[in-house]
Image (cartoon, rainbow, N blue to C red; front, side, top):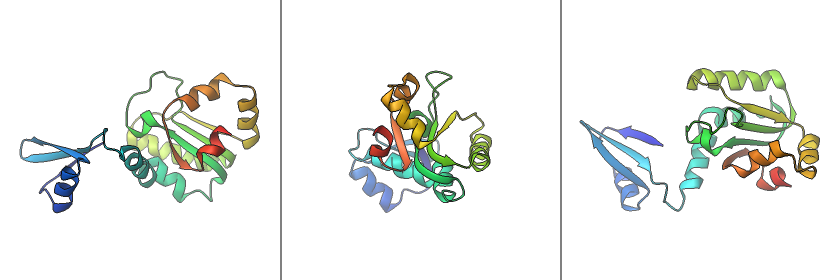
Length: 158
């Protein structure tokens, strides 16, 4: 997660003193990024994922999407890293989902990112069934790093 700032503000200087961010001069600009070894890095990553892009769109349109119990983005997707495999899921959404609304949100994010998004909608009954059967597809999703946008970890893993 990198961003550029023209003048270094007091807030950025304070963040640097707290070892939250690193800075790197490039030309006549300073580039800042959150340090991955910062104790609250995962929390910051979650906040950014929920307030920008697809995460923000899911939260904003939650009522129009239907009854969303869980919405989860993969850690690789949130960090803008390439998938390890073509079948890796970027978004898992659980509940009674209005498919056209979900497709609209995903297509808008695909256009913004200029890449396809692998997403999987599941009903609550389906995810429960897959958990009891120790489904390999669901297990692959759950062992990866993830950021919960809507819902609770307990709702996801049972």
